[in-house]
Image 1 (cartoon, helix red, strand yellow):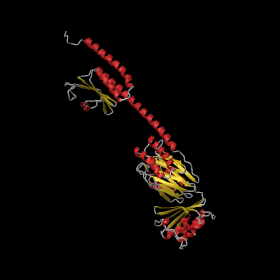
Image 2: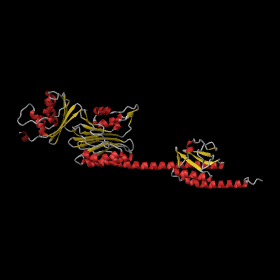
Image 3: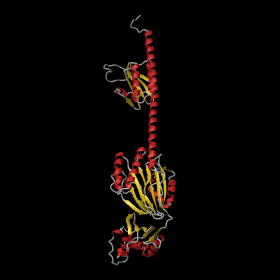
Length: 515
């Protein structure tokens, strides 16, 4: 008997011992695999299995990358389609293995999301291959479970953030706004998700609408910050600088920006309107004519806010201010054609203010609205006493001009006569010196004041720049301009498209000052 030959009984005992060790390992492995929290722990289990079968090298490849240190030659091995042993010599390992040149087999076992490799032996026995294949199945289940836990945790965090953001956003973006006395207010707010970047709120006499870039909790926090900053800014002497100082640096650091359309609404019909980076605000007159309040500054957060124009307008009975977000005109039909600003203007001009929101929403059927949609209409009560009259640029229309003014102003109003003289002078100037072919008078009263908007299509001319008429100097209609200067508590001029617009608040002057 050859004494160097292995004893079959001894070999059997060794195999039984190995099998026992493997069973113990698998018993230990199952709870460890189920408790995996990261890929590094999975790599540790592979290393333990390699040590159990006396294999010096092991590595794990998951989701496109090797975990831990991996020899360069292994990176060139193609992932297997099924468990296989690449025989010794089939893989060139490069430098000598473990300090001495040695051929090695490679056991490659696929996973759902990658594969694992063991090397450093000339061959792998069937039991060893079974052990590693079983390990691969456990790792697949463990990695799936770990990914599921991660996704569940991520979803729970996202859901928590979503609820927090929705609470913050809703706190500063109410579903309804209070209607100012003497007006009708209509609001349509349609977020693209549970909550959006669009916002609207009220602060004292101000109605504010805007759009914060981004989504989720960061956008909701910025919206809340903006509402707080506007509350402070609205009470300060300089609305522009206070808003800029409060928000610009934070928006710039966070890479966000904010657009804004804000209106200070007075009971008598006076509005102060500012537009910072927002789509043009539409001033729809009762006769359907449109004016625009365009942005006079870029969105907050893009550049320091140096100056913002605040436009003063009168809303006469039936006039309306229309505010909308980019969700309206950027909506696209099935052919990719946007709803567009021109269609928005046309709709605003053709339909009554009370029907604008309903018709806009109906007009979006067949369009994909990919962003938040906000529509806001503020209309001066059309039942209130007032006048809107379009007159030809002809001096023979002066009598009609006086009749129109008296439709809006009671005959015993103390400012009626000076207002008639002032408006007559401005009409004559527009026709004679500006070449106006059309003049539109809009007027209503508020207590002792007469609020007038006069628009003409003549050459650009600001009558406020005319030299004051000296007392006693006689000239045709000379006193009309003097009276306008003396009885105008407010007088604003703006060139709107091809029109001159004069906005006046007239009150009976101190006649002693004219002598």
